[in-house]
Structure formats: C-alpha cells, structure tokens
Image (cartoon, rainbow, N blue to C red; front, side, top):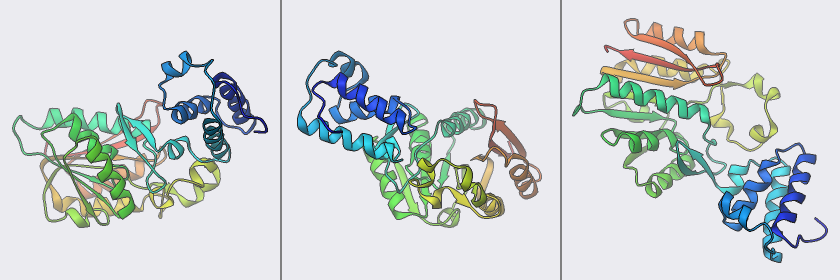
Length: 288
C-alpha cells in the first residue's frame, strides 16, 4: 500500500483487489476488516463511509499482506466458529473444520439413542487440539463427563483456555492416544486424529501445509497408523454399551472399517459420508 485509505469502503475495495490478485478469496478482505475494526458484518456495512485512522490503515494492511502470503485468516484473527461458538486458535492447533461438526452432530444423535436418562456417560476426546469436539459435546449434552487428551502441551493450553472462556467443565490430560485414559472405562470415545499420508503433501494447499501443525495433519502407514493404534488399544477400555466415532480421510473408509471390525468382531461398524458425499466418519457401536 503506497497511500493510506481515507474511508472504510476504499480500504475494503483495495484489499479485495489485492487479495484476488494474490489468489486469495475476496471475502477475506471483509473478515479481516471486521476484525481490525472490531465490527460485525452489519456494523461494517453501516460504517462504509466512515474515515480510517493511520493506525487502523496500518493494522489492517498488515493483516491483508499476511493472508496474501498464505497465513490462514483464523490464525490472524485468532479465532474460528465451530458449532455456533467461537474458539480461539493459534498455530499450535488445527483450525476446526465443518466436517468435524458433522462428527459431533452424529455423536450427539447416537448418545441420545443409546444411553438411558440418568446413565453415567464418560466421554474421551483423543487428540483434542483446540478442544472443539470435547467442549461442544459438553455444552450440547451437559450430562456427559468429558475428558480431552493431546500429546501437545501447547494445544492443551489452547483447549483449556477455550473451555474456561466457554464455561465448559472438561478435564484435560496430556499423553499419547489412549495412554492417559487407560485406567477408566468409556461409554464414548471420539477422535479426529492426524490422517493425511505424507505423500499427499504435494497436493495440499500451501495455506495449510505451511502454517498448520504437521503433527496434527500427517500420519505414517498411508495415514492409517493412528487408526490402527486406536483399534488395538480401545477394546480393553470400552464400556458396554458404548461407541467410538472417528473422522477419517475420504479415501480411508474401507481400511479403517476393517481395522475396527478386526478389533471389535461383534460390534456394529459403519461408514458415513459428509455433506459433500465423501466418506468422512466411522462409528463403532459396542453391545448396543
């Protein structure tokens, strides 16, 4: 930017064109301007003819340039919406995706169908990241006793902060997969583990690849390593009745289904599609 913009509408138009030239979506210009000015969409529309200060110009354009270079909007604004709530995010956690909202929605339906009123229901969210799954489940179904785990202390701190801000009573423990929860029996286990194969990196957006934590994205064995470990370790800690819900990569359905059928031969194991008709979830119901 060579000249500061005088009015809000000028800044929005200039940033929209700039981002479009750099291969980014124009809507990002509005979202970043809302954040820079601390305005809702409606408030922004009403104030289009208002002037901008030099500080506002500088702050806004720094955000726009950062996004043009590839930084996700959510890491610039520090937040993302998930299931109607605002979650704080930073580069130590994955940005929550709409597909994971579908995992939560399906888990809530099954919990209400499977468990009787007044039943003790312990839920574990393995690899919680920002805490989106665990916190949402607790807020939507307060009767749940929710524990969330992650191997990353930085991610757990983000999740704890989100739980405090959203007034969600969730227990957080650090550790790898089922290791920190192995001493209890669980009625519900949910997980959105790293599932991208390393060889798929060349086909990924640089916005994701260069900024989101690789430990939360990639897994060995063509992305199946953590599903295999979960399938091996979960049988000894699942209560009866209980269920497991997993988010998966769209090519992994048959492989993950087989892993859980091998580990739970008497269970009902299902593959579900997301709203875009891609294989996205595996649910395993035990003695239901």
